[in-house]
Amino acid sequence: MFDHRRRNSMNETVKKGMDGVYPFPVSGRAGQPRSTGLTMVIDMGSGLAATQDLLDYAGYCIDMFKLSSGTMALYPDPILRRKVELIRSRGIEVEAGGSHFEVANWKGASTKYFRKLVELGVDVVEIADGHLPLADSVRIDRIKEAKDLGLKVATEVGKKEPSKNLKAQTILEQYRENIDAGSDYIIIEGKASGMDVGIFDEKGNIDESELAEITCGISDMGRVIWEAPLRPQQQALILRFGPNVNLGNIFPQEVYPLELLRNGLMLSPLIEAYKRERGESK
Image (cartoon, rainbow, N blue to C red):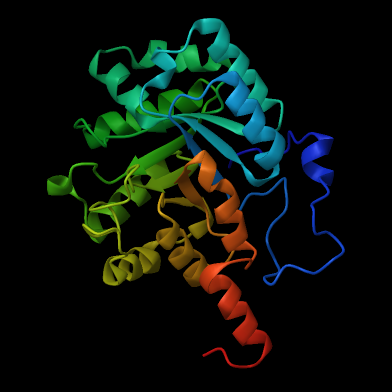
């Protein structure tokens, strides 16, 4: 399981603007440090100032910070190290996105890559096959190797190419195999677009039959992170699973809207909370 204990006092005691004015409509939102209701931010290459700004106003909402799409290969080394240090200083896990692993594995450099992550202070490595093929036996070996080196592992299941979209039974098979191999979390692929992949159709709507089948086959929902970059997707998953569903691929500008949804402060969660209090909810 991920260790979210490294919280500084600002994140634990942050006073919000409406404290003492009214209670949040939805109760039960897990506070930090938390092991459920995780929010994983996807970062596509922001600088130190932008990262600092995000952490200052929304760090208490964030549990994982994914350096995505190969961006670590572009950062000047001193800036990358400072960025990792900055994020971790707030008790937030730094995750290396799956594209990094795919390239390293393709080039025969997975061991060197894992060791570099450890040296940089990265907490979590995502082992994925979203773009490139990865044999099940190799996936399992890489999971075990990363764990042996002290990394936490988030394994992605699903494909980024619509033609290779994995259906529920295959996703469930990979879930079980990866958990048995030692994965800490299973990420259900949702891409950065949230369309035509995983549980989402070509318009980004949830395929309810696929979702139901996956949900029924998963023994521990707390170990699943649903990639859901679009607000309607986040809303639908919160309405289905509650405020403490694990959600990933959240863009920085969407961190507050997601937290509003989790606490019933806007859109359907607000309406549903109002109806429940009035006894009108179905």
